[in-house]
Structure formats: C-alpha cells, structure tokens
Length: 65
Length: 426
Ligand SMILES: Cc1cc2nc3c(=O)[nH]c(=O)nc-3n(C[C@H](O)[C@H](O)[C@H](O)COP(=O)(O)OP(=O)(O)OC[C@H]3O[C@@H](n4cnc5c(N)ncnc54)[C@H](O)[C@@H]3O)c2cc1C
Ligand code: SF4
Image 1 (cartoon, each protein chain N blue to C red):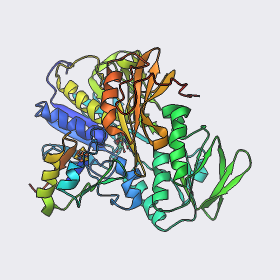
Image 2: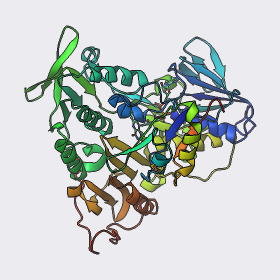
Image 3: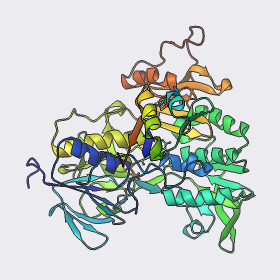
C-alpha cells in the first residue's frame, strides 16, 4: 500500500498512532514518523488510521483493492 | 486548435509531485481525452521529503515513498524520457528518444535539481553528495550506515539542517557550515535562525556559521576535508552539499517562454508568459518550477520549493487547463514543514521583506515557540517550532494581512505587548 501524509496539516494529534502503532509514531513533541509503504495485509489498520486523523492529513492508495 | 476549444490531448512534463497531482486534477475535472505524463526519472512519482529524514536514518527504504495516486490505466506514462524542446507554434514537444509529442494543453512541472557544488571536479568525488532524487538518498544512506568519522554539511538551509540532525540521531560527528550568521538565516532571518542554531548546537552539531568553503581537499577520488576561506582545514570523510536548488527550465530554451534558472513565469491565472509578457493559454506551470505573482506579497513573482504549494498549484493548474473557471488570482497561502531530528519547524506565509519579528507564543528557551513576522505593519509570515497546533491561528492572520504587531492573544502567558525585534535579514 502507499501512504503519504500532508505534514502541513498534521498537528500531531497521534490518533493515527493509536490506530496503527506499527506504522505511525510521534518522535519528540510532534514529529510524525510514518511508513509510506505498509503491508497490504494491514489495510484495515491503515484505513482506521486514515479515518482517525482529525485533519484528514493521511492519503492512502491500496493498489490491490 | 484555438485555446478556447475543447482539448483532446493533454501532456504533463515532469513526473513528480506537481505532475502527479496536476494529472489527477485534470481527470477529476472530467477530462476524458488522452493524458500523457513525461518524466526523465525512471520512477513513478515519489515523495521527496522523507529522503532527507527517515530515509537517511534508515527507517524508510529509499524506494518506499512512491506517492499514492487516484490515476487509473487511462494515462500514458513515458518514464526515463525527458522533454528536450518545446515548439509552441506547432504545439509539440521533442523528447530525448527523438519522438515528437503533440499537445493541445501542456502542464509544465519539471521542478528543480540540487544546486551543484561550485567546483565541478570536486562535485564528482565519490564521497560528495547532494540530495534530490531517491537514488541520491539511497547512496548517502549507505554511506552514513558505514559509520563515517565526520560528516561535513555545506549549506545550513532546511535540507542541510535536516541532514545534520540525522547525523546526530545516528551519533555521527557532523559539522554544518554556512556563510550566514546562523542556520536558516536566509529563510527565517538571523534572529530566529540563531534560536534554531542553538537547538542544533545543543544536540552536538558543530556549527560553523559565517564560514565559507573555498574548496574541497581530496585524494584518490575522495574528499578528505574542506579548506575554508580563512585557511582552516576541516577533515571529513563525507561531504553533503546542500546549497539550494536550480529550476529545470533549460528544455524551454528557444520556446519563447519567459524562463530562466529562477523558474518559468506565470500570470495570476497560472498560464505561462512569453518573453513579451503575453500569456500562452494552452500552457500552465506548477510546483517548484513555476514563478508566479502572489497577491499577498504585492503581486511580486515568487517561486516556492514547498510540498504543499506543489499540490495546491498543480490542482489549480490542472483544472485551469481543462477550462474550469477559477478564482483569480491564484493565491494559496505558502506553507512548509521541516523535521530536524525530532524537532518540527513549520511556516505559513513568506518572510521575504520582513522588517520585524516577535515571539508571540511559547519561549525559545523551552525550544518551542511561534514567531510572527511583519512588514509595514502587516503580518506576513509565521514560523512555529514544535508548536504546530498554534500555527493555524497565526496563519489566518497572515492570510488576512492582519495588523502587526498583533494584539497578544497567547493563552500561555499574561497579556502583554510582544517584544518587536529586527528579524536579521542580511
Ligand atoms: C530532500 C528533500 C526534502 C524535502 N523536504 C520538504 C519538506 O520537509 N517540506 C516541504 O514542504 N517540502 C520539502 N521538499 C520540497 C518538495 O519535495 C518539493 O517542493 C516538491 O517535490 C516539488 O514537486 P515538483 O513536482 O514541483 O518537482 P519535483 O519533485 O522536482 O519533480 C519534477 C520532476 O520532473 C522531472 N524533470 C525535470 N526536467 C524534465 C524534463 N525536461 N523532462 C521530463 N521530466 C523532467 C524531474 O526529474 C522530476 O522527476 C523537499 C525536497 C527535497 C529534495
Ligand atoms: S492523526 Fe493526523 S494529525 Fe494526528 S498525528 Fe496522525 S497524521 Fe498527524
């Protein structure tokens, strides 16, 4: 899967980190780390993260969907 | 075909962020004709910001950042092929493989490349790097993973600061050199740059501000260090050149468009201008390569190197080419982020021409604050360090040109007038 985050929008609410902790993480006070190519098997988790983001900063493409 | 007729063939030159988002906007606006994307890199569009951050730390693979896309199979990708010349009269491109490609509408999105090191022979040394493409990032990552003894970063702009911070995260000795008095001084001014410099220094970056490299010392095809203009020699086994970017406009030479190494000029709709200042309504430009008049800055032409701008302007340009009626002038507020180690620097607006700056939220001593920039009594930019949640409120002030100094609305301290300072632009 392909993921990108608009970090201009991201305000480190960390909702994505709770939804998909293996792929999203906050370093320091507000530096978001995300994995831009999560495993397709984890699409449910990634979709949960996308929907959880209060500022809709996460964009996902699932080439196999 | 006249510019107002329905286009049948749209070509996008440049398969980067702006090219991709522009092509998506063209399809989203209902265009069903032929859509071709020409890109001289071998890859589908990928995201560059991770290249100077998590790719260098090794947390993300260099080839992992291909951008998500809504484009389907109804797009022709011409990759590893460059546009070489543009014939606007005949409305066609000549490509690097000798083919000609006709268009009814053209989106120019060829971006920038890293400004090369001043001495071409030294730039070729095996351990001298710059970062623009994912291949650049992959080779620098491999070198950093081999635990070099000292990394020298030339240029303390955003990318230079990010690379220096990564080195410290990897526990590598790193020296950051710039002729400016502090890091980010050209973008943020010396006053705010000095605070950010202190944060880097506190994390172990050897800051050499006000220093200029005369040339690189080398032996056996590898740089061994840098000789400064004052004669001092700094040893290093890796050199990263981060001296900004040059716009990819050479291929437009001879097309009659107004273009140079600072970008291709656009009007306030986003159409490109010819050398006599007339718009060509069959061509738009977007992203790092476009220089356009920004209404918030007195209509002065600006060329931005911002991810968010590439997205916003490409969406605008795509819809424009399909013939949608769009608000004039194009006026999206510039915004930017940079992750330096685990510190986040964000900005809204442009600091150019600022005559004053004030800390309006937080405190540099706590390494988190918002700085607001003013020019002639109006807010023109806001910069947030580890204070992303505060930025939107100040971005609104910039977008509306609110009076500067602002009425202090900070909730984290008593109501008082902020101290107005010289932003320290050279
Ligand atoms: C290392 C790095 C880190 C960054 N970090 C941040 C950040 O943290 N925050 C932020 O806001 N911005 C950041 N940016 C800036 C952001 O990535 C750019 O603004 C964005 O990539 C611009 O997109 P673009 O499509 O205009 O240009 P590009 O991404 O440069 O794409 C242009 C494409 O066109 C191709 N091309 C050039 N000439 C031709 C030709 N003649 N024919 C065919 N193809 C051609 C190029 O090879 C390239 O693939 C960073 C940039 C880099 C390099
Ligand atoms: S949920 Fe959204 S705003 Fe929060 S950290 Fe994740 S991407 Fe950023």
